[in-house]
Length: 387
Picture 1 (cartoon, one colour):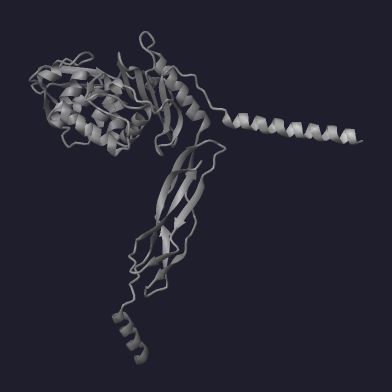
Picture 2 (cartoon, rainbow, N blue to C red):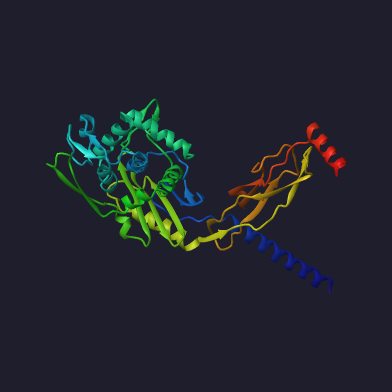
């Protein structure tokens, strides 16, 4: 009997150990999409959450995906109807180019179609010189915008993405930073309309030359809900592509850098479809809004002992796996010193996933509370005795 009990315990312990070990292996298992790209990333366009990445933070040349930034900076000017005069420097840019000549003039808006649909290097320089005064001046604007958007590893030298070096730095970015820039660009309706345009015809100011440019982004016809965005290639960068897909409320951004060299031109499309399939099959759009009420907090030295608080919240949408759950946490002061202003921030409500804050909203006071002063005390005493 004792032997049977020992054997039974041994079997039970072995099963527990096996299950625990299996659980550990499963928990540590990481998806490997077996991509061609040396750097790749998939992002939730709305929240900025990274859904998948392979070397997604590696600093690399990004070729003509650079033109996403060139385009959005141009769209944010009030000069779309103004004419850009072509310089000798712009005319002399290497292929791929539109073929504009020094002294010719084109409407800025028209040049953006040349820039994004066919990735012309000469129009990129013409745009940069027009907006920034020079290529160098425009690069400063590009870098300032990148910093504003939270890009920590991006350095622009050219507006067209040609391989370049300056002050010991390379023209470079990361898949993550390019996704951030693209997420920002997709908020601009004119940008979205432009990258989805099939073709565009325009004329030089004098009316003597006419061009028609065609969208070379094959991804637009490869995937349901594809928004396109931008291709790129240089000898240093290899094939690159930033893509976007919208299905229902969900928007995905993919980035592949160094995705092969000639003759492997199609790898960037294959990798992009693999990334998008992973996103659309594993993540689902969910909306959240907390209904928690926070009541009131204590006011020190105020004419009222407490002040009511509320949250300036709005509904948020996130791409989540089926098993993932958002936690709603908060930080709130227990007391505040008078005087208190209406709308004064006293805490925050946070939407947390895997220890990362995906969104937060301020908890604020809903009314003003004055501080107790001698004059206030005197008035209150007078009121008491008069009543």
